Image (cartoon, rainbow, N blue to C red):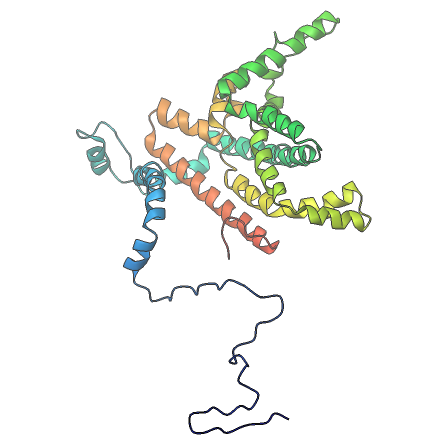
Length: 351
């Protein structure tokens, strides 16, 4: 038991606690030196304080916001001509022509329900979209898995560059290359003739047109999707593959239980965006080949709007078709995003 000594009024009492450190909060084992996380700013912080704090980020994003506003949102004002009998020659300028054009209400939208050419273009658009969704969308995923399985990084880099190179080609060049390969005077047709067979011309076959433009899109744009999926695969920890291998999983099981679950959020996001573009199946690509196969097989909504609005000058009806296309695409995005939420993925936006 500690002895205490009293040595006068100026002497401290020694009870065995003089060398002890002052009591303080105890730290849990393994948490020594842990950095403190600053508490978030209160909700009532003045907006001027947040503006000064984030002014650098705001200035960086301001050009992109202005670009979107000028080229995406300001032109939406012109959609009012869909409810008018618009005549661009009324008045001295375009705005005066809009103000003086008579209003017709939903007359152009009622006309669409009875327009056989519009219904045909809508059917071709949906058919081409389903073919592209079935054949094109899985290709980047499979190519990314194949390239990711390469052991040497240099081989992966070369394969990735070769696949991504056609993305920079214009559609004129892509169509020309396919014409030289599969046209009536192309390499395939000449090879068949040299061996005693009749030549073929795949570029002018209306029945194969939807598959032709799908394979053109695969050759041109599959490399871009490969880069997106490879970026998602690079974030997968190698420890997961090692743990699966130690548990006896072979290559296929590691791909099924480790790789594909890591790609699922990216696949869900790109699928939602692809569904949102269901009615946009490639205006320039189809316009270049529309004459070769005829409008019955190659007329889609984009080319229909071009023909009606630009060639025939029916701007109001073309604007109405564009509005229907935009609203339908928005509904598809919302529906696909809802399905992504039901599958446990975030999609384009959170719930």
